[in-house]
Amino acid sequence: MKRFLAALLLLPCLAFAQSYPARPVRIIVPYPPGGATDVMARTVAQKLNETWQHPLVVENKPGASGTVGSEIVAKSAPDGYTLLLQGTQHAINLSLYKQLPFDTLRDFAPVAYIASAPFLLVLHPSVPANSVAELIAYIKARPGGLNYGSSGVGGGAHLAGEIFKTSAGVQLTHIPYKGAAPAMADLLGGQVTMVFDPIPTSITQVRAGKIKALAITSAKRSALMPELPTVAESGLAGFEVSAWFGLYAPAAVPKEIVARLNPEVNRVLQLPEVKEKFAALGAESMIMGTDQFAVHLRAEIAKFAKAIKDSGATAE
View 1 (cartoon, one colour):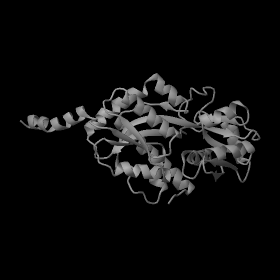
View 2 (cartoon, one colour):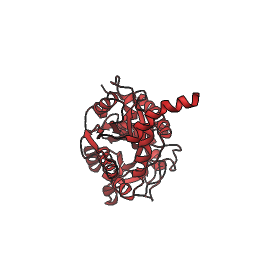
View 3 (cartoon, one colour):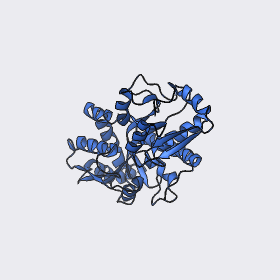
View 4 (cartoon, one colour):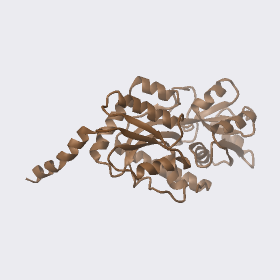
């Protein structure tokens, strides 16, 4: 009898999940149009729209390193009709900001891991180092260390440098810029010595010989530059810092909706045309279940929390 009653209670949830979506679904991107997060959201939405009866509509809600759009989703109705596609900053902001209008872990349900995009460790050609080991020795031979540029305080590129500094036991001075483009411009001009930069924005300069790449920050080599070793295999065991992207719903969303969304998104991520589109962004789609994604999120929050504490970075 108890099993029968439990089954009866589950019927409305199952029916709801089977009919989902019954109206358009919003995917909030907390950044302006045209960036990697936006392109990924629109790519996934387009492919889901080919098979879904009701469309997924991408809305850009930029501001405060992604916290404006994230707050909209955190405080929206937990019915599966408002989702968030956010990058690494989702794991960073919890420790970076003194006060957030939401709790990254408590207020969101991880739905699907989307993709990972590593950084390249690139140097100005004047630095006489052709490997990570040589670079570390070169930095240690200089009492003041070296400087490195990034797209801004608290971003993934900044914290990649801080984690490198701690892992290698070297002195590095962070030079923040308002975006990756001015940081790269000053690297080309020799005003900064090194940068952790996304592959698409640096690969052309590397192949033109204007800067040199020593390693990639992911756990494994990239198909875009398979000749380049990882930082980990270059001597800093366990080093891994990448930009990554995930899809979230408000925390109280029915589990049946998440169970419907996860395999649907994972199906799209395996399509050759989606993989090709992501590769142009320097990213690789990755398949995770929701539990695996939740574990990954917690691990990344812990990793960046330490880097933020060590660097003293903060945001209001």
